[in-house]
Image (cartoon, rainbow, N blue to C red):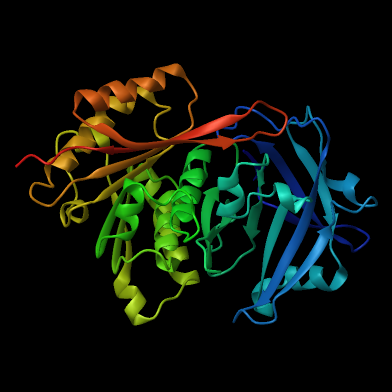
Length: 404
């Protein structure tokens, strides 16, 4: 999958002619930023601006650049060989005035840059899990608003969770602007969320294995995510369970964990989830999402925080964490240490989603087997790539017997 990324925050530029333009500097890369989009045919982009009043009413979407229009497609066109695309987008006078005075006007503005062809836009879990098209994920940039606390070095990703029965919930997560691969959405997390959403659809052909039983057949489900990053997997799983009509789970507790330098972004995304999906009292009791720091070097020695120790975890989820092979021994020992806390509380299952990048990552499976983890269920999901060979995301459900 490819991702549209902002290399610097969009800026409003006043011209001597009194015109106001929106200056954009972007790139389109894979999740690790190690390969730029190199499709055979140029990929036109559309630039949109969503405007709404402070109370959320009066929402309006203005198309600034229509990439599907022959007259405008050249303005924002990604060609093979590009590493950076710079463009200045002219703003309509009234909109420019509102944006320049956004704090006084009480209006919020959210910029969206996406592929002009909606069929290649990675906008929902259904189109991702089908694996039929190579996709490009849109980027959103909220101009100063209460939700992003004025942090102009943060962009967002949106993913609509499709769980059947016309139930859909859109989650939005922040990620850093720039070229760093840290604190970004990655492929395996997106595919794993899409798989969970698909399993919890009534008509799904995937919903008959051990993972389906865990997600739908227990009254209380506790999910622990290791190496959460921006939280797309953990928050996506929470949102899917919240809207599912297949699952009989009555209470869901989700705990996201990562190193201390990941705390700010993860907790910001938890707040964003809670603020944008306000719940009534009954629903609030049903779903709880928290965060706690966890270093696997501590975890392998059984050193855990208060929240992790507070309850048994039926499902531990991990995505995009096998690329750093030096940390695999600590990861496996951490998993086994968490399992050891479960004595008498039932089995722990580990859901691992990984996009194979290097043969050395296979060492994880030897380490898991040595610690007596066995594969209970697995699947390989296609991930087409524009201008490149087909890639895959592998998903495994590991289990381990509880020692009496």
